[in-house]
Amino acid sequence: MHPHQPPRPDQATRRRWLQATGRTLTFAALAVAGLACASAASAQSWPTRTVTIVVPFPPAGGADSLARILGAHLSQVWKQTVVIENRPGAAGKIGAGQVARAPADGYTLLMSSTASLDLDNVKQFAPIALVSASPYVVTVSPRLGLSSVKELLARARAEPGKLTFGSSGDGSASHLSAELFKQLAGVDLLHVPYKGTGQAVNDLLGGTIDIMFAPGQTVSPHIAAGKLRALAVTSATRARAMPELPTLTEAGVPGYAAVGWFGLLAPAATPKALVAQLANDVNAALRDPGVEKTMLAAGAEPAEGTPDKFAKFILDELAMWARVTRQIPAGTSR
Picture: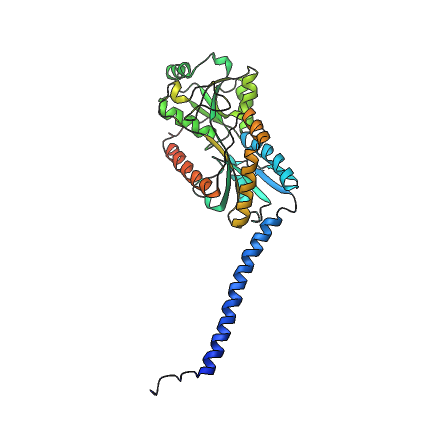
């Protein structure tokens, strides 16, 4: 034996070492399996108490109405109370931040929209399911006397910067949809941001502002009552809820396509098994005939899909709107 070579263990020693190591590996494997089973069991037993869906906008907006429609159905499925909590501010960022900081146990969820997320905070959430990706409705005050997009474009070009459009806040879908319209149509409109869709619609009804790119569920009743006039929808194809309205491309703005989306999110660390259960329950709710009928009547089209597909959808949307935002000139908001 070389003088510096450590002695080899005898067969008995090696056998004891292998037995001990085998026990250690077995215990580790059992521990991992136990954690997986605990996570699955936790998901299966969820929920055992009230679930809160945070809406990061004031009541009466698109996110609020969809959260209430979905929450009412899920409370029956889960046999637990579902509370809708409005936490408006900073174009949805305040409510989103509250959910991002909440325990990742599935009891605090976010009804998100285009405005609630950006490239900085998107990693703080686990996407669950897309609830609706509906067109916005190009809506005008009847006092303008306009009956088509062609007439709107003619007025905007004749009076640059005089027509006003409202939104639920800087960076919201209602804001960016109108900015995309301005960019593609080559018109100048003045932006008037509000703290929520409901406030903007109230001022549109009162004639304080002229135009709004609004979620169908917030303006449909007023359109039906003749208090507001709908000119077109923002999607690439006609809306199921309003098939009589042309798309903006059909109405004279080639290449326009945008939707206002709403989806359910959880804090980023929420266990995958629980996210999967939530996605299954939400998608089942969206396929329910009663939920579908209620959403369509409110001007929103049900959507569904896996958490992974929703995550990709969010990133694609953020990239598109980032390009639109970069082209917004300074000084175009009141």
